[in-house]
Image (cartoon, rainbow, N blue to C red; front, side, top):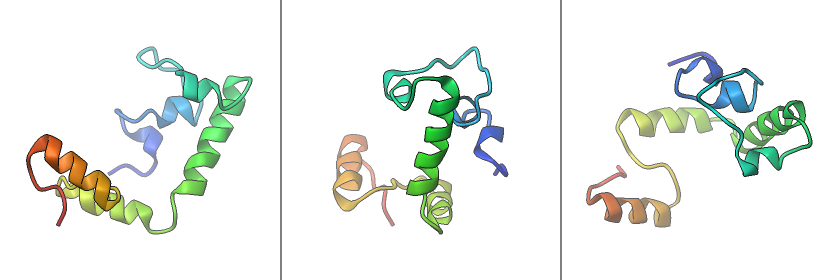
Length: 90
C-alpha cells in the first residue's frame, strides 16, 4: 500500500487531484466540468473525494480488494457477480 493515492503508479489522483502532469492521462468531460481551470478542477476533485470517503471507508476498501470482492450495494454486487459468473461478496 502507498501512503497517498498519487504515489500509486496506476492511480489518476496525481493527475486529477494533485495537478501532476502525465502524458498517459488526459482530461475527460466530467472532470473538466468541475471548473474553469485545471487548478479549480483539482481542488474540486480533492473535495469530492474528501466529502465522499467517510471515516473507515478506506479500511473497507482495503479489506474487499485484498480478497477480490466487489464493493457496492447489494444490487451492484449481484449484477457484477452475474456478469463475471462468480461470488464477489463474503
